[in-house]
Amino acid sequence: MTGVQLTLRLLLELASLVALAVGGYGLWSGGPVVVRVLIALALPVVAAVLWGRYAAPRRPVRDSVAAWYGVQLLIWGGSVALLAATGHSGWALWLGALMVVNTVWLRLVGEWSPEIER
Image (cartoon, rainbow, N blue to C red; front, side, top):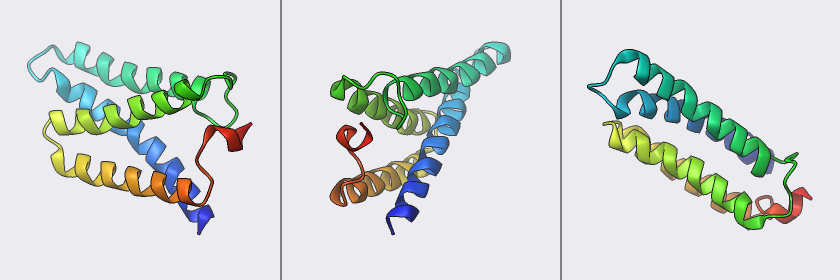
């Protein structure tokens, strides 16, 4: 069951990147399309860089537990908030609920903490 939850976590991480792109595009609904596309491209790229540096299992920065938690909260919370703010509240609700359930489950079985990835 843990393997399924870890796979779901990876899919949720990828879904958060998609949500950031969708939310970023819809954030400035009256703006120029070029700017909206740039925002939609920039948000997932910045998120992926931050995740890779501070939250990924093979991250180079391992001495900051606050950064590990903070980046995950920022990216996952931001993706849900952007979806909700841009009119995709149903998707935001489902994505957020899955993220919370998955995180709680992995924490309960000892698979979600910065200590296990050292």
